[in-house]
Length: 241
Image (cartoon, rainbow, N blue to C red; front, side):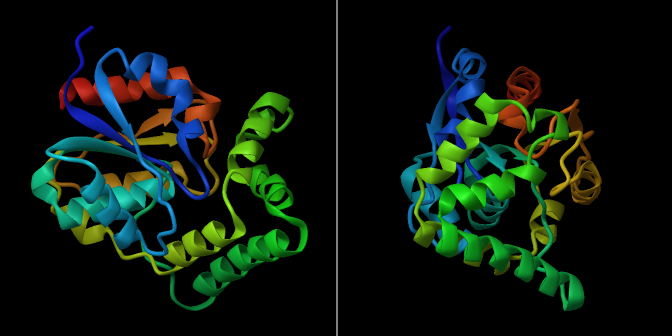
């Protein structure tokens, strides 16, 4: 099939890379050209978004997973005229909470940083992944290994910068309220970090309110847990765009 434009920009989340998207490629490559993003050494979501805009030319579609969804919202804010459609996946839009909830998030992220500095990235990823896939997949040795190896490709310095970016994240509410492109909201049914309810809140802010597409039996890492179902949701959105 001949690739169509605009191209699809794929934005990964915290400590993730192309491996998040690889399981979807057999389906995505049938309908569009893809551009995979790396956040390099950036320590803010705005800088990450600016890197996307510098790296990709012309108009494009975007799919952002987890932290990548927040980057996608920043791209929408900075250059809405270049964005033809956005799929937000297993992500959120709110800034760091004030008070006790914000402090709790800081403590949880610091605990992971402490593991990195004391025991290494693999030890941190082994702890992190426990809440990031569906409970039934924790015994899937190949899936867990793929996630751990992906994390190991990053450095402690990159992890620290990306944590800094997330803790200083902007509020995406206004961006969602002003969205003028075709939106999709996709979430693993068992995502405990960015739950379906959070995506329903985002949908309620959009001028045209899409139904949240829930991926049955999947957790936060839905693209790696249930690639066929995620690809199906994305293909439906691409066709609508």
